[in-house]
Length: 341
Image 1: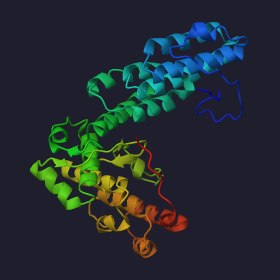
Image 2: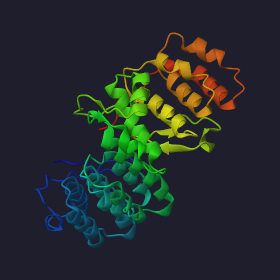
Image 3: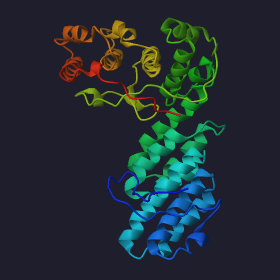
Image 4: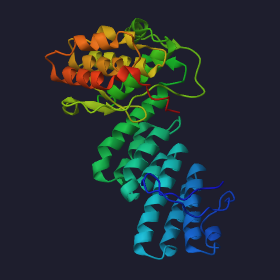
């Protein structure tokens, strides 16, 4: 496979050597045969990524370690080692080798954050317990550990529920307090999908313990949004969700379930703006803000009138949302394309 050697996520434009296709299992000994330093470096980085993709943690480790005897300068070595660990980490994550992936992310330097998020959002379904995943968090810089824990919890519960064809409330209802919001969020995504956006039916299933069933998904995709920076919202409790968004955490389990179901409606691409309109004046602030964020980004002939009626709302967060939406006419834009696997 041909690879363009660009610094991942560095934002630095440019080109670099093209590496010849690597045979399966190729490692440092193959890369050492390249005649030029740049080609040897390129080969090692690609070898680490290839090994990660194949789930070969030992070979990925060896490829990145070999850079120390290949790069001529300390500056070059640091840059390429960061890149190598980033590539190895994200690919090992996609292969389900979560602890090994995080060990690389912890050494990815300026790419550590990107490596951690790419790893978390790419982990495939499997049978590893969440505690096993979380054991790898200690390899990360301390400043990243809380975010990484949140991401891993979100992904683990997402894998347990979404696209499986079964939304059993029991595991989510039994989740620990730290995991309960992530569990409710994942259950809500699958419950909304299986009921085709029927909010009362999903609520009834949760209350009664009924297992909703339906066809599984081959590709687990959904609608998502880029976070809006609204003054005042950062002070409210939120968790990371699926693919990089964040949602509010309710003050009670019942409120949190309502928020999770609204997020599930947004993720469910068949739900329109009208599904969120009844919640725009909900007395619970986090529910109201969630509905407003979803409503304002979806096409609706009544959007401008509905939002204008909220412009004088005494809640400053509502007022800020409305002002921003009216200024940019956000309901006329196109919501982000499906983005999860």
